[in-house]
Amino acid sequence: MPKELAVHTTDIPGLLVIDIPQHGDNRGWFKENWQREKMVAAGLPDFGPVQNNISFNATAGTTRGIHAEPWDKYVSVATGRIFGAWVDLRAGESFGKTVTVELGPDTAVFVPRGVGNSFQTLEDNTAYTYLVNDHWSADAQGEYSFLNLADETVAIDWPISLDQAELSEKDKNHPRLSEVEPLAPAPLLVVGANGQLGRELVKQLEAAGTPYIAATRAELDLARPDSWASAYRWRSLRGIINAAAYTAVDQAETPEGRADAWAANASGVTALARVADEAGIPLVHVSTDYVFDGSLPLGEEYAEDAPLAPLGVYGQSKAAGELAVRAVRRHYIVRTSWVMGEGKNFIEIMKSLAERGVNPTVVNDQYGRPTFTEDLAGAILHLVENNCEFGTYHVSNSGEVVTWADLAKTVFEATGHSADRVAPVTTAKYFAEVDNFAPRPNNSVLSLSKIIDSGFLPRNHIDALKLYFNKQI
Image: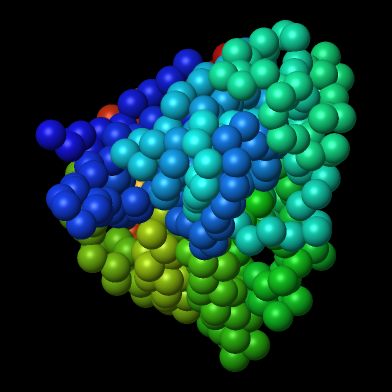
């Protein structure tokens, strides 16, 4: 009886052994060596191979490796048999861990990026095949790592002694494990790294020791895709977090602003989505409550699948960007509202007014919850690090729904000033004499149930504000 398709874990994290059904008769045999739909359903990563290579080995005892490469590999045998050995050369607790498996045509192995790969043929005329999810590039040479086949630490028990085997001179002279620099994980690309959210993402990535590339607007301007479409080895990235956007909501209502908003939030995001999907890497895209019209009755919250109905140019351009991102097979859309982070924000503006003796007029008919960038960045990295289900998530701080006027009063009290100095006003009255006024959603309350169900609980915004000021309120 042929094997049933099955995927098995090993002692090396991410290294998987696949049983492949092999059907034969008097004419020979047939197998589905790579069948994406069935194998992904069985537990194999959807790693997006782009190249298929074959290594033909004329004699038994041919030995190759140990090579760790900057891409994932799917290894199998077309004819003959091999003894395969894999050594984890990635930084972490499993560095140096070894797994060996004998492979015939009915077995395959998935090798994640950074795990050293080697094999020894056990029969003459063995055809060893492998799929990879990146094209070979001279630029990637610095991301390789090598280990000597005879390393005493990992002590691989080769069926045919290495002094009797066929080896290349290069493979004979690879370093011992003690000399190998562990491979760091593939980096995340943070787009918009100089914004409030981008700076917080970089801060948390650094604290976690997670490799990243910070791209400011000077390095990756969403509105100018031609300047960056070929600037990165996209397949060498772990994923992209897009924290950049055109956010001048009122300026977007002008002819120039409208063009700029669509260039960054729609056309630029479409280009970013295209490269992410072609590279087979996840794209995290930060969106906004402005994709809704805010007409939901007060007391109700917007669910992730609520219909898009933006009121102004900014919301329309962000909604268009969302639609482009939805076409990416591996994507997260993270909608948020009322973002507060390092630098100029509503809290800092109210604090400054309070300290300067200015009594502000603040709208009291727009409802929502603030989002501190610490929580927003934490939620984004939670989704990425835990391989959460792809799709759309809402993230704001939790707690009571408030108005902008309520929040202003809280800031005044937190800084030792009277909340009575804040004068509530309707949105219509506030903007009555303002040109290029962008319509705002009255109800910006986002349902948090999905992000909470994923295992991330945003802080209550009152608690977050206490920590922001580092004092009791």
